[in-house]
Image 1 (cartoon, rainbow, N blue to C red):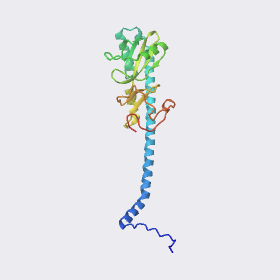
Image 2: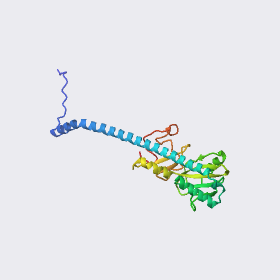
Image 3: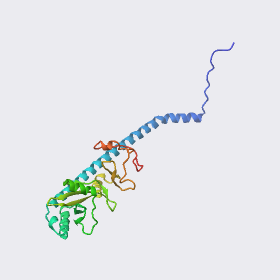
Image 4: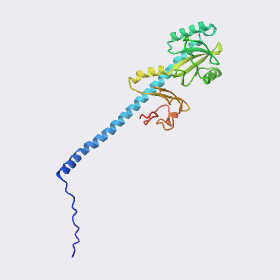
Length: 250
């Protein structure tokens, strides 16, 4: 009569070499798990530190931008109070603007223009005209108040903005001051303390108005819905995000 007792399962016998390998793996497993956890924690800390540094630089850049705009407004207010900018001949007007720029320590050009953008006098004799956007001039002369444009590329490829104010005793003339992105970057570099970074200025419509360092294919194009900062970019005053940008860098 056959037996109903199941036969014992025979496991293959491991050689001494494989027993040693298994023993080493079991011994190293806790260390490997600890290493993986440590790498993940270290990566999270590096990302958090990078986001904090990026937010600090963004705040510093915004503060430097606002400070430069305020300085430009002070230059324009000083120009308002200078009667020689209205009544002097072009040579005298240019001399007054040059003196004004020196007295206020303004680092960029200042011009007097008419409503068509024709330069009547400038602080930099022989320099290229500022050529503010037509829409900016239209708003300036229509609203009759101080105006600040968005950043645009000038003829030399620089990212610049314009601040303007009408001269009250000659409302057909306006004084224009150039706001150079490079000056904002120079001030922000102090806060960066040698760390590498790039800045993008995004307009109200989501267009990239300026980028530093400059790179082809960015300025004048939409930031895109796939960017890590979207869609919070248009609804939050500040914030951070982690992801891959359009330049392919995380």
